[in-house]
Length: 262
Image (tube, rainbow, N blue to C red; front, side):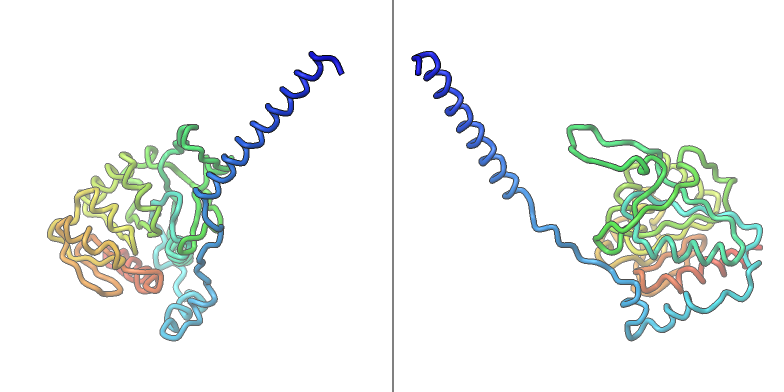
């Protein structure tokens, strides 16, 4: 073998070895920065069949009697990626069964900068992601974005929970401005689970009676709210609930409030 050829071969081997070492180091670091992909889930059958949730199960499985109870009413569910599935789909189904026109409203699509390393499906442009507890489970189509709606468009709004959804909503100026204007107009503002923290950001809780998910109680108190640990709390044009197990009580309270205002 010629000297030049030998030098070239050795160089290739050294470079190959360096590349392998770099790849190994990178793999080792990625392993340290990652966890085992096992997530907790919220089972709908398990929750509906759990002892103590008989009324919740009956709410969903008993046919709605008066399908014109909310006829002529227009409602908006305001949500973003990470909403708790049953807290949106449950009331949405119920209000539509009662004859209401309900729009799914979300913040205007705003993709994260490339440097964040986030990958989103194409449908994220006009859909929002549902979760069951901590596990992403599906997507729902958005009817309108928060920058497109006006107070006069609706008779009531409701906000589902989910640990991520409220944080995404709190960051959106169009959402916060709309909630403030809607509340000022005396129209119904309803929120369940973690969602009352969005109302805290909108600064409309001072002196108001309310409830919410246990983990956000201190936030609601710090916002000036008068907290109660009850399934539903109604204070004027504000209705709040604590948890997915309260969806039935929450939905009925919202419907009853709208009927009384007719």
